[in-house]
Length: 267
Image (cartoon, rainbow, N blue to C red):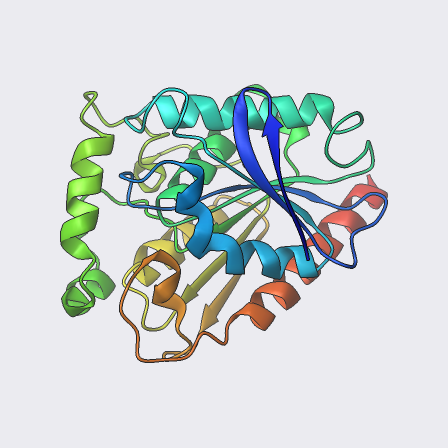
């Protein structure tokens, strides 16, 4: 596994490349989590297992410090995230990857929110440039009223997410890009791959958003890990299981990318 620090425009990033990296490797812009409260490149440490899993499947994965330039109150992180996506879309032939590389966005927890928001904005402004989105237990619902969250109060995350949502939305209002699960117009976004687990407090909003995208005609795949796989640990949640989900991420990600490649060849 190759890990290096680079700059994507004005933003620092960690880049992961696996042994299977080669010409035309997919580029993944991966937004780290942190409940809308963490910033700094050090915040990406716990996400490295996800990044490594995708890199082992042949991708180039860049984790940017997207909160650093403007802070972490909406819409600033989204604006930075979209700018990074636009930068990579324009530079893929002369920077990371090459002109044949698929460009995907991904994110976990709060970073999944940013990725989903960028996908919506890309649909509205730059649709052809985004090939897919990968959402790992995205934090999408500011009301946090789902059954899976209520059942998981003991995991120790609900208060943190409450504080995070209050901070993220403190700029005023709740734009659909800020809370994608409340967006009424979701057709036409990039194909999506979702990850969650049976014991994930964010399971219901992850599955709910995936179902809504499917109903809107979006190509969707979802993978629900069994309870005890250690999945809540990706965002700091307590878990008694061992972290044995990385192989599933690599396998499902590789299959998703292969499907996207076939679609591109057909078009």
